[in-house]
Length: 358
Length: 180
Image (cartoon, rainbow over all chains, first blue to last red; front, side, top):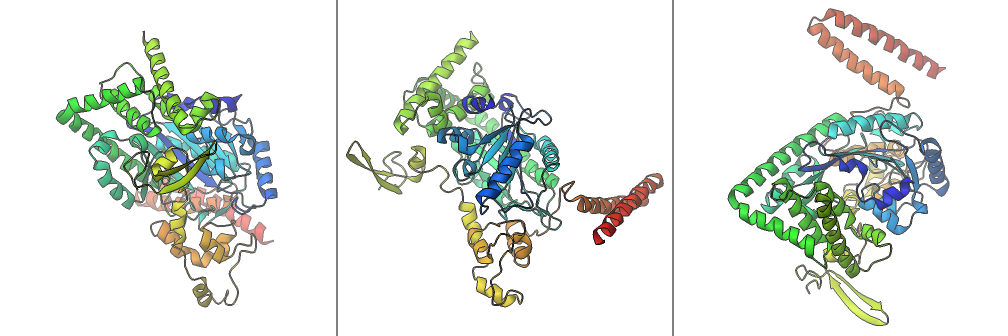
């Protein structure tokens, strides 16, 4: 059953594939916000309206397939335990808002976990699509097709002048939020990123940490997304974002090159220290884990470390978060127990990898 | 007081924990509080919306003076019942009709949030907006026609012209039907 896979597998099937520029861009995401024309938005809708939408979405889309997105599974929030919902958040399959605030929320998740359609989040429909690496155009193209497919059944709230109508004024128009997750260790080590963020903001783009609004950039992973949704076509929005991401990739590669030229030994030392901590520590917090994983990932990219694959790092990023750890431990853990469990899980995972090697 | 976890940042989260009757005081910074699960991870997830509500007209009364239609009575969406005051406070619309009800106050807000833009450019739903979709297609085709003529690509232009005619016929047909 898919729900078990969603909750027990740390790494989504689509994330196991390598995409373009995947040494720097981990994933690309496109999200479209849509609403039913006739129903009040979830924020103020009464139970009956919300239940009607849930019923409709389940009836029309549960276990349906679209393109390569097979067997959409309808997962109701009310039927999940708190820790299960948190796991879905940690995998970015649902938003914290859907997990915590929405009493009548649900998500339609494709078998490969590439598509997740949240129902009764802040808007009635939030369809999101992920691609590995840097593939914004492909993501938009497929999101459009998915949107057309949904629209065959749903009467969208749309206004000729204002576009797709959304609960929050920040999403109106295209309802599009396009984002990329980038690993920018060299720009972070050299502190160049701090100077670049304000410039990026001026272009109408937002830079955030890995968990969205208000979160810090754990493990040098930054999320770059568009802010403006009204008055620009989806293609133009993607084009702007793509331009900035291209520049960031260029700067990151250049900064890595400079670091290698000017302080290769220090860099190598940093990478192997972090590798050592991951392999041998007995207690490790999530923040230190994220830092060490970032260093080791950089070490792989720069050729210091050959024998471990990057997909393990992707896996550990997800696996070492609080809810996942507890799901894995099959019990509630106190913060201190978590740090101990996290350390032993990382050690085991690395040992496993080395065994596979020989 | 410094954070007892990281010993770097100032402690901003203070509380007492009682485990097995033993009371411990905890003083940590926001980051460590999140890290240790003392506060909800998404506490400040709505910071953007808090900021946003500052962009609305802070004095709804002033709006009543400006607008004759609403003088003496507060603007309220007749479909979902949301008042303009509520909308300004929470920064979210209640339903699709709110966009029409509050329409005259939205341009300044949208301009601030969307770099000066107030009108949609982009995708149009195929079914619900089939007329809108066709009107947009018509506009695009007319631009294309001018281009083709300018480039003296007359064969192409003739094709586009035929497409325009059939689209226009379609649209007129729809409108007549709507009138009856």
